Amino acid sequence: MTKILLETLKGNPSDRVPFWFMRQAGRYLPEYREIRQNAPSFMDFCYNPDQATEVTLQPIRRYGMDGAILFADILVVPDGLGQKVWFEAGHGPKLTPVNTEETYAELSLNGFHDKVGNVYETVSRLSKELPEEVTLIGFAGAPWTVATYVIEGAGSKDHAAVRQMGYGNPELFGKILDLLVDATSEYLCAQIDAGANVVQIFDSWSAAIPEPYFHKWIIEPTREIVARVRAKHNETPIIGFPRLSGAMLETYVLETKVDGVSLDTGVPLDWARDSVQRHVCVQGNMDPHLVVSGGDAMVNEATRILDTLKGGSHIFNLGHGFVPQTPPENVALLSETIKNFRR
Ligand code: CP3
Image 1 (cartoon, rainbow, N blue to C red):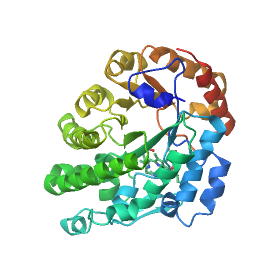
Image 2: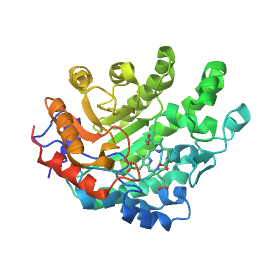
Image 3: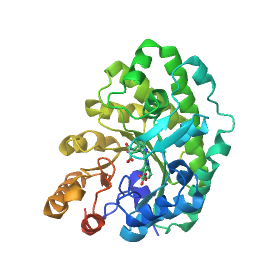
Image 4: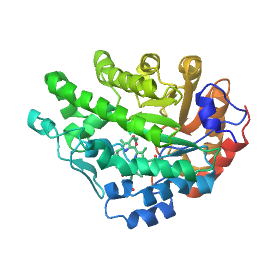
């Protein structure tokens, strides 16, 4: 049986458009909430191969997506480097901020793989348990996006602390990015060794960065990770997701040399078809809130996306992750709409 998502990324698209959804494992599913409730903490959940494997499989059983994304979090990498990471209900992620030479010196790659080893175990189990035609997607956060959490110690609206360090203390900021490049490259290679067929690099916070800094903070670290992963695993496609990067998207694709790019909801599709899709496979880009509303508005928009991108390589996805209030029956209708479409 063919993994059509993997083949599409390699430039061999099929009649049926492959699909998966960001945050397809998550709080909108009652069976996810059931298991999540029994985990002592969110990080324990990510490091529990039984639970992480089970919640990765849940949406595949219900909807038959072509891709299963490993259940973990982008903050596993700073946790593996020795930073303290925890999640507070209603407040999202918290970390002890790394914003001085002293706090930076406490991070280290020594022991990294031992600390995060259970994630590799989850990947290995998934590669055995998933149906043969399903593509297993590993992932990591991009250094810039992970650095926003590492330096701020939490999520934030404008990423003030990280930008100010990037401009004002480029030496310390550069060391943090370099360490994240090292750790992330090794982390993705280990996921591929354990059985991941594809990896995605999430740069969720790449909006509104001045162009020269977009090159330094977003493109260069990602290009370096792509080069290192490809040197070891030439056959494994890499998807980049520079969310909200606007007019920098095509430059990102050409310079990082990713095999595919995820489009956020605001990317105009005629433009994407005529620019980035000529170079690589595109993935996206339905507004997750349309899946909350459902009905004709959702089905019509899915059809518009499929129609516009059908001339080249396309993986159907959202423009960002499902929100917790998404009705599971709308996901079923959306999945059927995509499965019934033919290029
Ligand atoms: O199904 C999947 O998409 C796979 C698993 C996955 C999670 N996080 C699980 C998760 C993936 C790929 C991520 C990536 C991630 N994590 C990103 C990049 C993608 C994006 O959403 O922009 C970011 C920025 C994070 C950091 C993070 N993790 C935040 C800000 C939060 C809190 C927000 C929230 O929704 O509560 C998380 C927690 C998190 N990661 C949840 C899930 C399912 C929800 C936590 C819960 O179940 O209590």
